[in-house]
Amino acid sequence: FITCATVQGDVFFLRSELPTDLQSATEDQATFLGRPVSFELGIGKDGRHRANNVTQTTIEAVQQAMASVPKPQGMPCEGTVKSYSERHGYGFIASPQLGRDAQFKTGELSADMQALGSQLIGRAVDCQIHTLPDGKLKATDLVAKPVVGQMQMGCNGCQGC
Image (cartoon, rainbow, N blue to C red):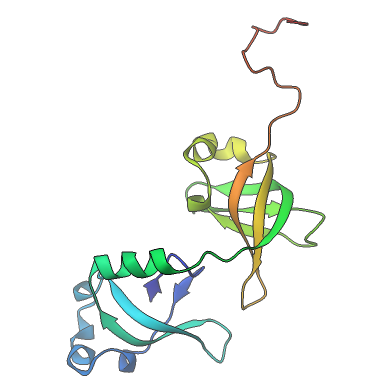
């Protein structure tokens, strides 16, 4: 499988999609783990992402390709973080606008939001919603909404500062 920052989930590929000289070397998986590759992204018969014409490349080529990919605009949405697992690196947002939950990955959170950990659950957020080819919803560009009624300076519990 290939992990790709612009695709949610792993990308499957067949051994036959590798260059001929690498097809026989696949018995030693450690040879390929963590190596940058380029590929043509397709959709398999099962509706999942599939890599075609897989070739080894440089990390610089991957970074350049990533920088040139336009970031798709999603549908603006307000929601609430329904669940979040630091260990698994993802969570879900619920919103009446959606009718079902949207998944987000830890990488979509700012460092400040990541620092909240499980305290992120129940927080109101603004985000962009994207519908994936398999019909699932993905949330990106998460921004925490200000917590209403929370004092900014911390007044040691006094009233009417």
